[in-house]
Length: 137
Image (cartoon, rainbow, N blue to C red; front, side):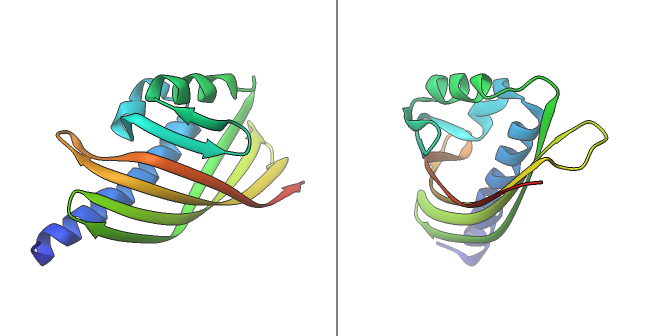
């Protein structure tokens, strides 16, 4: 694999984390296929194991709280590309707030992901979410 291809792949996979954060913050569930593979598996303490993009989207819709918003920030991204598959991990801070008010809840978590190259670009095939800490403000 050429260095240019490897760099492009790493950038596209990093963008997946950003697109996921924006999808969650903006509740754009119809865009889930721009982030997840159809056969995605998501593992989290709140949702357990969810298999398939429809189950994941359904769970995200259930998490909506009237008047509450989130802001996800992602940092410390590590990506290891191996052909058409990659493993990636990142830290994330999530702020829960209401319009014009400071966050009332904040959490830190780690995301461990497997991404695959699809005909439409890189997508997450597996996501494991591990909470690290929470704070009620």
